[in-house]
Length: 193
Image 1: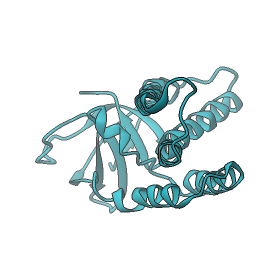
Image 2: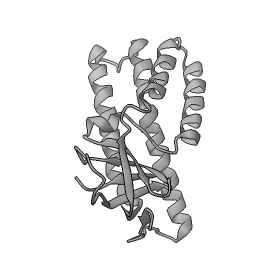
Image 3: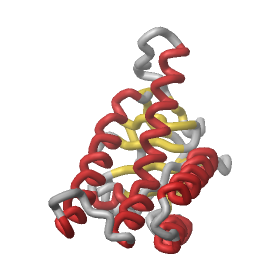
């Protein structure tokens, strides 16, 4: 038996339609969170401060971003519960795998002039492409909250992406993730520590 994803409980307020809407909202939140540093860099680079706060705006912006990231992580409770068990043959740390792609957002944000229309258009394009292409929902801000990113492979060649707080996973022997939330078919957020 390969990666058995068990439906333990399903949160669906009014059936499947409600569940699809909740997952859509959650994925939009994850995409905003993954691209929010783009806006932060634009604001700081162009010295766009909160009125009467000056450069302290940087600290306020960072605080807002971290609070938003925390809310995204805590709102995973709306996703389906399950577990990943089975013939796990390989696990690899994926923390660095997407960093180069993610840094591309920074370079785009730093190259924009102080024009709100251009910012809006470029951010909308980055947002849409990130949403459409981000099947894994990689977000380096999660690292600040103690999460790591792992690829897990089974004997049949299936690969899934797990966002987890587990540390020092050195062996696949008896490895399982008994409490995960399913973001999509290939991405899970682990609730265990």
